[in-house]
Length: 190
View (cartoon, rainbow, N blue to C red):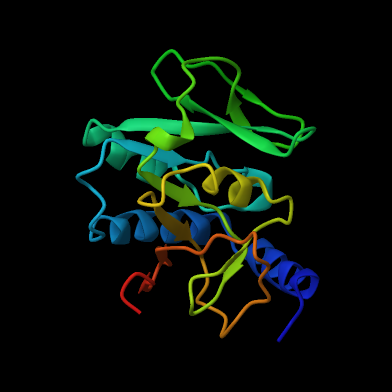
């Protein structure tokens, strides 16, 4: 089993090798695959805004689906001093600014408590066949998910297929689903 640092390096390099066209094509395929998930009867959906320079999945396609279904969309703002995320309702007039880390974030707005969020779309670098995810290593999402209700659905988004298994800690919160451009992983029904 590769350690977390080696896996982060491997998947960062794999992502950097993708062309802009592949990123858009795969991002759209992921959004379309999400339509088949049994998650669309909920109201509050938490979604990250993509870091273009890190070649993350473009979540605009998912945002359009959520807007088209008139869902309440919640976006995070990360505090790198505390390691915590605050969630804000994304509205037409929500001002977005680029953080020093290259993350588009709301500068102000209506704060939504994590206990109200019903579905979270999660960024990740890698995941395994049991639903464990590997992020950038700051622990923002694990801390955030620990404050959500147990019924909150966690949907990972990945350009790549699952690893056999990942090194995990007791703070890691597993996924319920993970969507790639070519596959849907359902960890609720393992």
